[in-house]
Amino acid sequence: MFFKSIFKRKEKIAHEKINYKFDINKWMELTKEERLKIDSKEKNETMRKRKVLLKSIRAEYIKIKNKK
Image (cartoon, rainbow, N blue to C red; front, top):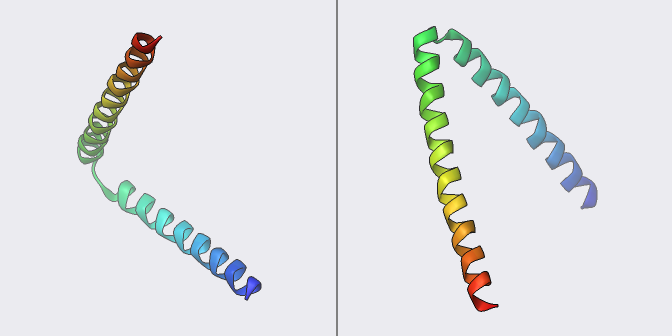
């Protein structure tokens, strides 16, 4: 039973690597403009998430500071 779980993990990891390689191939088939457009969308989403995270962290620090 223990060995089955180890082998299943290895199969999942190998499958993820194949999918990752396939995604890189798809990425390279896109034109430069399409890649830039997708990349800028991803960057904007990441920055929005970071800003929200920073706001929540600052709010928590303010709460902690006010409790003291």
